[in-house]
Length: 527
Image 1 (cartoon, rainbow, N blue to C red):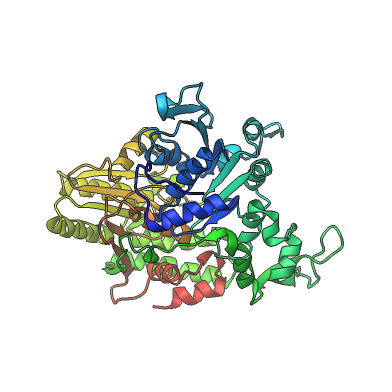
Image 2: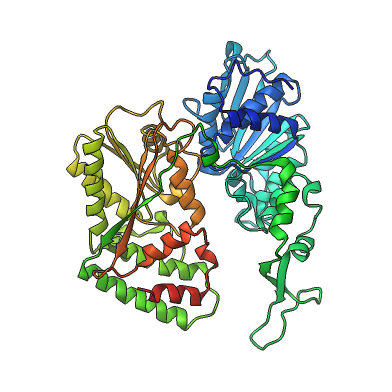
């Protein structure tokens, strides 16, 4: 198919032209390029070329809840940005409140056969069980009649469907079986072989030629029997030993990559020579006062005792407790439940401030940036909501002319939308901006490329959340090299803290969730 780009609102980069052509040529396609390389534009442009050729008439986009609006937003969403003026299109947000806008010739009047986009999210589509134990599938069943062999299914952030047993994977598979085309988008697809089972089978069964997870595990995994406390092997209902995955064969990842290669594109930002660079992060040491350090040491020693007296494996609840140490390096203590550490669940009434070492460094960095660039727009990421609240108040106090805003859990949608406009190039104000956010709320689909300065005040143990947040300032609209500052707490004599542990793991691309108790004990004892 000859591609005429004359109608494109934004001229594509060379790699976007190539990837659009490849997507059109493959009915099932996997875009695994790094974030901020323009994956969304590739999909929207390809959909319009396919529509013009009469090959599709509808696109269903399934994304995480925060990203649904990034696609749909009638003012400055991705579809509004990339749909061509001469493409008649209806864009529908399929959620509890259905909304729609139209564009193209005569606003895509009803008598015109328009290209129809339906934007929804995993959380809305997945079936659930109500209080009366009834299985509710209304959202999925309501969408299925609208898809057919001329529908292109787009799964944005396909990391959300890597669990083949999950209800959201099953919902997406139900859609896939009726759609003629499918596109998966995932910036980190090959982190572990097990995640490729679901994604491969959703793309097409011929890729893995492996219908059942038992077959997949037998082919690629190193497995050992699960042993009960009495030393006997755990037996499943069919009388066979239950096996657990303890590793992967040497050829596993190579074989999987070869199977996916014909239908996959992987672009690194450094290879997209027409895009700006991200400078190496600058580590900024923050020395804790003796008072804060005493709190830290007491909590750390309790964690070590707990780990040494526990099992060799480690649960997420235990990691939650360990991350109380990160709360202390941020200047707070208390208010965190024993499990389920999330920004929205921190009981702020019981949080106590014990220090402001990192806050003082943030204020210093902000002042330095404003001296060099009076209209600087600075993004700061934190792990804990109380840390963010205090920081915003102090920045307002010290820089009264600076616009200060944030995104965090529990925020009203209207307030969040206005805050996000501060960092989009098309809507960013002329003056200086200080923008704060928590990792969980800033990790998907956001464009912060009006900023080129990022301060990481505290760290998230999820490498995926962290990397997603860092990439928000990168992308085709970025015009500057991006600077990163990592604030790392240390003891009065330079002793290591939990910040070093998390940062070392993140830079080494290791997953803290997979650490054993002994690994944590070794790391915590190292000063």
